[in-house]
Image (cartoon, rainbow, N blue to C red; front, top):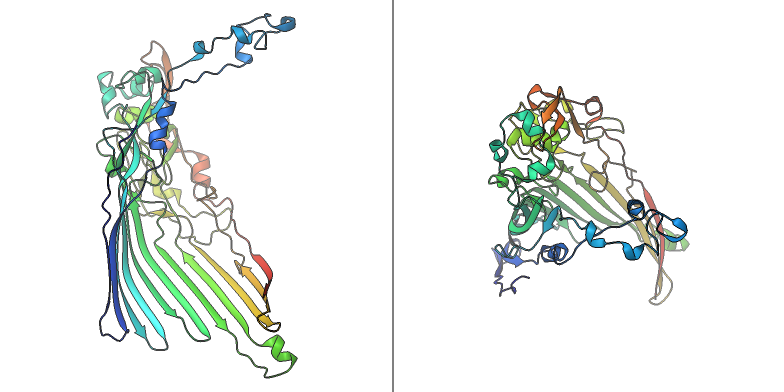
Length: 479
């Protein structure tokens, strides 16, 4: 289904320069090109496309009318007697969505890496290193719908917002290049990611007390948040889909250390018990996860988007992905600055979000990136080796993980912050022609919208916090 992979040229260069020749100041750098294989679904989806496969579903409930009283003992429905009478081909339907390889755009995702740093030896056996690290993904695989209605494509039918909002879904599909299908998702190698960072480390790796302090100031932007992500099909998709990625963490600070404690006892049983204890710890501080609000409810529906733009074929709204068709406006920084918010308190301010006027829309990404609260965790371990003669020894270890029993809302694996921006229309109109010979009751796009009472009360509110202290006791026998 796809061409063979060609020879891929992946040059790499690295260098290290001891400026003074005494090891006190060292410059290091390097760069390289790396190719990766896209996921198999880029090709495998064609297996589910007719005529490669068909889908037909028959169940007893739907066949009761088809076989009234024809089964065993007068049973109505599907059983061993009526199964031979069932025609699975009569239940076949055209697939609503198709995913298939794109022979016209076959490429190979790649990553470019580059770094340069300066390391300097400091007094008291310290080493400071500061560097720049960048990673750029190019020609990453995404998906775009090739069967879309262009912006303004419905205007040939009507430019009346009410009539556009009332369009029957099947009638809407008649404006597509392939009317019997809703989407034809083709793989496209157009995704990009841009990561840039300043990274600094301070370390002391000798003596009774050693440590490593690592700080990263970074930004992660791009057009895709996941492999094979859906992108807008329109000509301005790069503007709409490019922004801060969900993986972005502006500040990350890690501190790790070990300390061989003094040995105060010189002899006797006290020496065996009290001497040679060790402490070690790790502390981490990190910025929160970005989040992009998007409309739900009436303003997030296909009906309103097609009334707004003459099409509804935008990639659906997602807090970490596409912006959706119509986006909020912003009058202030929606971060409430409440990084230690308790359950029931808010970290985002709905008062900074607004609803655009008809035909207008807000920015694709908030001017001030909304973030979940930052996190910090601290682990502490105490351990000691007890000699047992020869090479044998017994190690006792006590570990305290999340030492201060801290908890935080989790928006990566769960949805612990209320993020729903639900909207209601101010006016509904009945009897609007739907383009298919009937009528519909629809929101009037020109009459305005409002946030629901639940959104005003709860948007940005912490609903759950997760995290707990763990204590680990361990004995290790060496022999």
